[in-house]
Image (cartoon, rainbow, N blue to C red; front, side, top):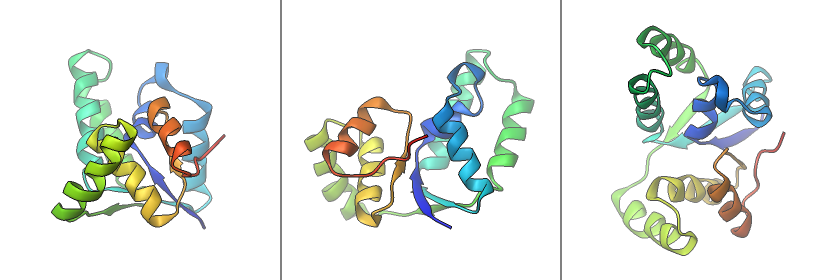
Length: 139
């Protein structure tokens, strides 16, 4: 069993056929082999927001959202909570240093803090992870 950081882009790609990727499929297979993911505590909100935005754009139905969330809840994804001071200090610094959103800086910070590789489809985040010496999950 190995552990890795997962961001919302990987998970959301499973829902939208036009966003599917070999990397996202590889990450899904890792769960089948007993791997465990970790994510910042805001991760479920970010995933849900992406699904609701897809619904507004008529890309996914309410029924499919419920089914997807039910399936997603069974995956071994451990949420990691950050203190306010960590967000205002560490995440803030990483965001500015790497020109990332606070959310993406949180994924980067979690990968740095744990030493776990990051699974993302976000090109900018992946590039900044490589600059910071963070390993990425590859296909």
